[in-house]
Length: 454
Ligand code: PMP
Image (cartoon, rainbow, N blue to C red; front, side, top):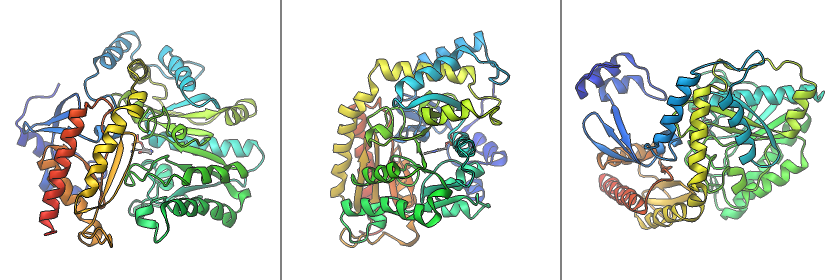
């Protein structure tokens, strides 16, 4: 156990030794951030005694909030029974076997198998390995390219970050040479003078064009999130996914639905591909599968791929020490029990999701809100100075960070992606929790407007 310290001692200790993900290290030396010390329901508390409404479910993972003792009990029981064993060398463990079956049963009918990892990034690396193996075994070794989208987030390993579409990230390492990015279906930033519907078709047809440019014989797969999360909760126009699926139906390429954020009910269906009626060959999952309480990710594999890699593949040279970790799998089983028994997916579709969306969209009357997107338990707001021209509050999309600081001051965790303010609240929110979220968001928007003299 750690020794008790004062809040400033914790901050100094952390700033002295700890390098944080996606953080400006020098800035952190002076800002020293916040040390989160406890949580309950949808609220987190820092060591300064401040209580925040967490509208991000941690990092899109604690869909069931922070108070779920049954998951802790499952973890403790599994710890006492079998705290670790690996899944190499013809071995398995009960929670891994049961979870694999359970995930196949709750996924669309084409899915037959699961490969476990510890994270979404590793799951997307696994996808690349599975895809390559599949095409090699199908005697089409030229099929290598994976098409992804700008502003997509698929993780932080070299492979997953190459699939991702953040230029600032790509500038910091050598990306894999066989990835290619098309535009994201973000009508607000990319739609020019097109209607949302027309733009959805145009953005989808970028896929068709890119397939033809590179040559279908060289394309292995297309990877996409149903709703791009970390890119700014980009809810695509309704015309987008039907057109993408039409293109995929006509082409012999695999489709990966990265459901690390959209999986397990976030869009109002168990998986986002069901909300949008797409037919993936592989599904990436992580995060909410354990409510974020244990690290676990993986890939759902469809019949077409599992048949080929099983029948002809020999040994698959890939896997992790903690693939199918018994404690993580036990946490996932307990999470799915709660999700299913308490009907959270239907709560998102029919109650708390629509309530959030109606309240969130009321913010569109605010003077600095240029555009609002949302679906299920996801939402985003574009900050602007001028609602007609969509001129931003200041160049270089700095206003999001300013607004985020006001949110923090107002005891609300809302994330900024450039000038998009995004939320992904837990499904356990009451209507009153949502009202409080909106009240604090509106106050933060008012303060941001005042800061910019709007
Ligand atoms: N895919 C998506 C869509 C994600 O949002 C994330 C993480 N935010 C990842 C993959 C990577 O997951 P992890 O951080 O667990 O590696």
